[in-house]
Length: 604
Image (cartoon, rainbow, N blue to C red; front, side, top):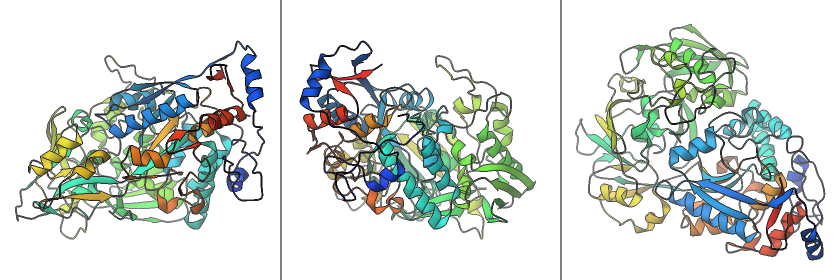
């Protein structure tokens, strides 16, 4: 059955219950989303008979798990090792390939050079990200736009429906989409970690007013010593912000917290420490839908970029057109930004009515259309000349890649609350307050940059980052601490741990461009080899929640919540140990076979 033409055939429950048998039936709700079919269990006798048959086109399955090393993300490599053990128990030959963060993202997001990968997906507070993450339109594009190469026309319809709806209708459409993904498993969502950061109490107040994964977490802080020229000192365990400050670069940006302080957007997604979310005006003074699809945005007056050039509606119009095609029409095939193409795709057209007014034609529902206002605004006079084809020494650059997508963008020119000052690669990057920023105006009720300087020191380990805080050499760990260090943090009067919800999640991603990863039945069985609850305890020391759906809890329907086990694809074993015979039965029921040595074989 083609992965493209139908959602996975689901197993028919043996009884009248909503769930199938404990051995792993798909719920009827999910089965209704699927094209229903039957599978037949295979006995040991049939297994031996198959092993005796010589088929020249069937080979032992060998796969590589691509991930990052421990100094980039300790949890990812530990997850990869645990998953490798589980797959090997099921008769699959597994190797692990570790790549530095930017190489990992380049391999997965740009070159699509992987079998399966283990890593952290940036996610989003809103399920709109699922459209670009999984729609077949993006299967050959770069970035977090369908890096899996997943194609399924029925899932496409569901993704479009949740994108085009609003209110309760959209919530229902999201639910149907999640049900289909629970069956298809284009990737396996494993867990969502709780984020912990260490801050000093004695220099600034206000750490709980904004989420520290977002720009608003570093604005509005109040100096405790009354000083107007305080330096805000962050320690960052990821060196990439000291090497590249391009907001469009997929391999150097995860959430883009630091580039958010350099580049403003029309609106900001505000998530507080309780996880409550709202979309608030930023460069936009206000916006209104004149009709179902016409969104009119009024800019705040007298906006400027860091170099003194005026920021007008023409720059906003340029930004949305440029993000959609960084060649600016100079190539027969457009080269969209791999980070913001999905957001920009919600906009069919944007026109500057005058210097401070824009008219957007929205091609989606209003909820998703408003989220497009979070794209970073680029100065036309800087980026317009970056539409030529790129050439990077020593790096294979895909056809259609432009300078805009590969430039390190140093020094960056934005309009954000902080502007670039200097850097030393892999040591620090330092920013100065932009005193002409709109947030510093009288009468503007937005959190403003209160420190004269923001210095981001690079330190690769959570343990030494904690030491910098405790020694009063830094004020905040701007990247989340690794979970293994949290229990060892000492109780002190001058420091404390800030706990924040996360919308990012760890996952096992399949490259569906290859067999057998293109086979949804194969992906289902692999999902059942992962004991998410055990991994949360063993790898994350309990500082995460196992998940069955890749969206925040507020969007997850009750029947898809992880409640002791995955509701659709429960683990084939217990306490992290895979039941070898059960795993073999499931693979054989899915149409695969084993040889006499107990090795899973697949057709090539």
